[in-house]
Length: 375
Image 1 (tube, one colour):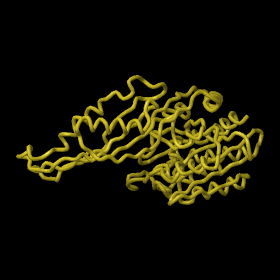
Image 2: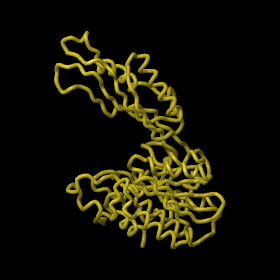
Image 3: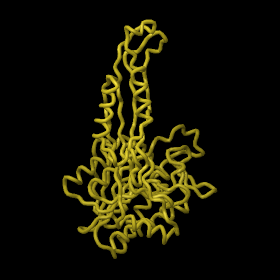
Image 4: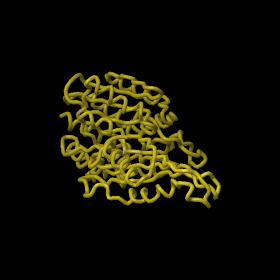
């Protein structure tokens, strides 16, 4: 079964997060046949898989996820979302084709090739979860806690997220900003709109502060390799549905994507202080998605550049753009982490697809990067 066939088999499994739908069992069977030791790590409703080959030495790990986002209205798709379809223009279409069952299939073939020719030192591994597209609580976050507790060491980690823009390998992520979300309930006093002196409008209290936070230059100066910290309001809810009542509370949800200039603790303290100084009484519920991470120059980045140069004749743009990935849980274990995968133009969209010619290049590319780290 080649990489296209394996990707198709994974697409057929409707693994909408947090369901794995048998993807990991299929992969485990193949890797066990190649000599890998396999652990199934289930937490709550989430399936995780950790497969390793080699007993000691530095560890190179591939990291991916088998879950996908919901397909949306199936009638909007050109073909059923969980029926892999080869298109006349050389694409493999189906939910998860690019994000990220294509990379997962390529990981498996790369690992089978590494197992067949053991001219490398150390250990190789594959970590998969079915909780990347969802809450990301019982997936790699929990596995990382387990690894920390038992002293599991990963030296280099390649995440197969679809990083590429115009062609395979043109963008490599060398880190990500942190992500912090807050739901703040602004407290006021309900009353009649004709008697504002007898009420306290939480909308009026909140809006000037929110505008100031949105316009703020959070970093002061650019942080090397990182986009600026951003503050974005996602939801604002207030009111009773009638025009003559001042509401008694307003709920605002906002997210910060932040550079290493900040930590979650520092941002929480700063924003709660800003509400206090502005005399905007509020109750806060914070969700920490992950701290920022950054991989500096080292063996992994050099291996990625070398493989891309030799195999694809390109020099990648190495940056920290985009959202978050499960790499944020592995980096704190001391690993160098990069993200490299197919083009991301169709991810999470109707008619998600991956180019077959790029998919065919991925196994050798991933194998080459691992060999350069373990050689």
